[in-house]
Image (cartoon, rainbow, N blue to C red):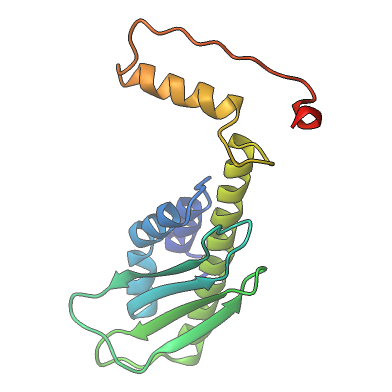
Length: 178
């Protein structure tokens, strides 16, 4: 499987810059069906539980079925569990297609796919944290100048901004006044 065109297309699709968990889950859902067909996978569910941290301000508790074969699947799951850097847990549950039992080669390939999904979900979460840090003030969490400019450009592009002027005042060393 690791040398197949289907695997290469899967990797190419999910290696894009996707800075959020929801977007990565959607990308996996769109790219995984050919891999599932080759490996006789009937069902994949990804669950993330993480405490409050820089990466997840309110913690995380999300679960998403990223693939489900319309013909059904077996009920004995293969479960891969991973720990995140902030002491969270990612669980990937995979079930074989109906009336199929994974052989040893399929199990090894399924574990590789699980590893890929875990690594890339972590990457998406870190990219989200970096994106947030880039657009907010570190002390207050308030929008910073780049975010205000980005928001203004978005409003202008959506034609929701007419006859508007803006004034930015950058107070150097304001933290000493505060």
